[in-house]
Length: 164
Image (cartoon, rainbow, N blue to C red; front, top):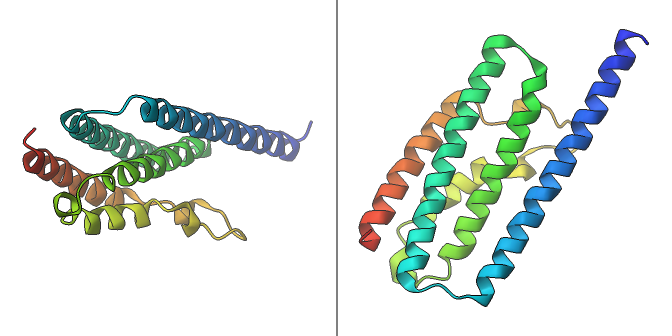
């Protein structure tokens, strides 16, 4: 088996793995949404849940930033699949947060919407041109550091505004 065939096989299985993991994440997300619809949360529980979602986004952003740096430092292309997985996870996190936030009264969320929209545009998978899906469309280390700082500020401001 030639080196080109091995590389092709590796790329195929990496792509298949990304697709499978992305599908599982989406199914888990859908299931969690449907389960919470059966048991409505109290306002305090809902606000605490939203703050926990922002905490999870902060952790994912830190993981992405660290993995991006490891990719740059080592040049190991096998780490790139992890970046795509984290990209999708962060996108799903912002989507879920936005979806649940709009259930709150408008006067409580109006100040948060512009920052959430900025974050969602950074992690929008539509940024990838279908013709050339390469890593250059992924957020780089500086963008992720700025996004992490903004998310931390948003989390702190959100917790303060909600009295948590």
